[in-house]
Length: 88
Image 1 (cartoon, one colour):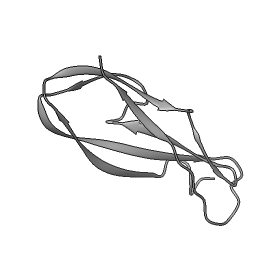
Image 2 (cartoon, one colour; image 1 turned 90 degrees about the vertical axis):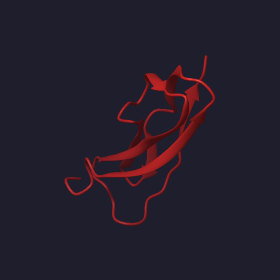
Image 3 (cartoon, helix red, strand yellow; image 1 turned 45 degrees about the horizontal axis):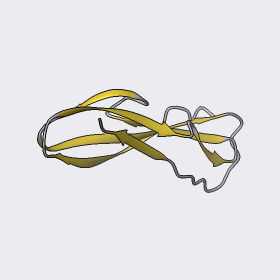
Image 4 (cartoon, helix red, strand yellow; image 1 turned 135 degrees about the vertical axis):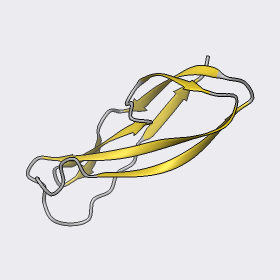
């Protein structure tokens, strides 16, 4: 578990808005079950949910997966999840 807990991987995404706005983000389904005692939590710019500011024009943001485990088993793991940006 010590080799898994807290491990992160990130990807940058671009968001293009035609006007500045505040939005709410949510990670659907909470923690993502990866199998074998491993789960992942997704964040958007370090937040799992709540209000974010999106500026006018193109902006770059970071989506991060953070792993956690309880008695993980060896082998490949996979899962999927979604972060939703709710606009006003």
